[in-house]
Length: 193
Image (cartoon, rainbow, N blue to C red; front, top):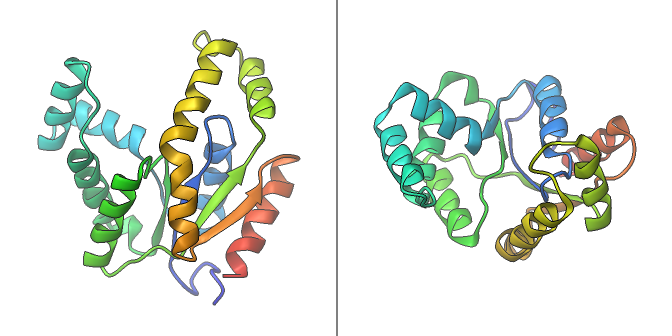
């Protein structure tokens, strides 16, 4: 089964630590396959700005310093996947972040009859990520903050690697090197599906 544009829908999750290159590779996949990147951060910001029902609930949680509940995030994903540009598939970036979210996503996609085809895990060594993020020079990217974000990622999201491996969906792609080389590896992994 090949995943070329127009041939089959592309329905994937991009997994990887902060700084692993998910955003960069998502944009390349969007251009190649013509399906939207669905980022929970973008969805949250949009829903809050538009003051949708889910956006108002999310804003209340964020204003209280709480995490936005999985129900709200999954609801936003459902609304986004119902839009016409997602008919031929999607690239989920930044979601799911936990096994509970992954299970909720499985239920949602089953109801929509659009199960995932692949979960691409961009593997990048922690030291490489620290160097990448430090070189970006953002104010919140000091080494301690970066290492803390990586620890949180490992604790919450690494179990997803096993979760999707058990489902036979996971493909690991080395996320180091030239951007185009990494993209070629991702395409080869998808086309081998």
